[in-house]
Image (cartoon, rainbow, N blue to C red; front, top):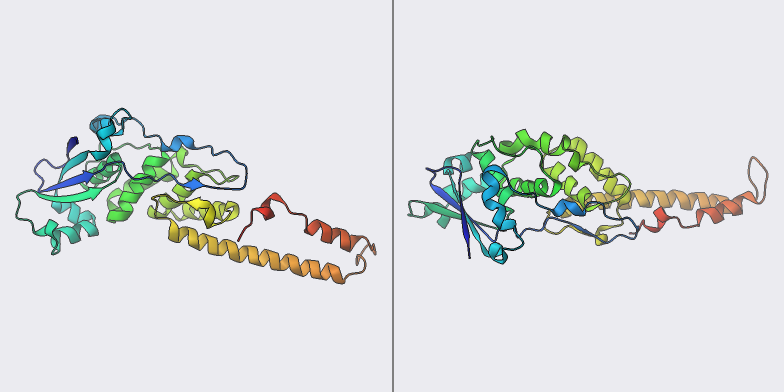
Length: 285
């Protein structure tokens, strides 16, 4: 078992220990009826860590089988953690062992986080903004969002929200097909409180989704958001089908077209209404 040491606050009084780094899986899985190639397989690729984050490269290396069992020791300041994060404040001020330890350097354990995402969030909390990347791929942005969401440290990272989401071309989603990145962008927009991006992404999912049973969100806590979208989707489909039923009943009662006086018109229209299309076939409940 290897270990990596990363100092953010050399005189800090807290050592965060990240166990099993990079265990988190944030890439969703989709099982759709529509035959659309997933265009974003590259999103799960972690870029080479540069600058002060280069120390983490060996934890991503495929040739290092021990990376999953490694530990990352991060020296931080309790003062900064308490100011930025309510969960950290509870750990450090509450009755838990982590807050009442008599050791000079108290330890707080974390598990599974992407190590670079975790380090970026902690750097921002400590005001170490120089060296934090401005352009990130969707996978790393999503991993950072999960850390921000869990530790409730949105204010400390707020300055990056626009450049990582709105102004980041790699976060642009397709409006023609549902991809893994669509779900990741929904979660990031929600964590970053970007109403415009959230509403846009929600509409795409509402229009293209084939139901919750077709989506596996992996480790992204998207369940509640997708349930709300699914409820609205079902309500809209119900309204559409009710309207179509009403039209069909009206046609059944017609003997000929009211304007053209054509007796063939009503039954022909009924036949057309009952021909399944790609969209109606995928509109499952």
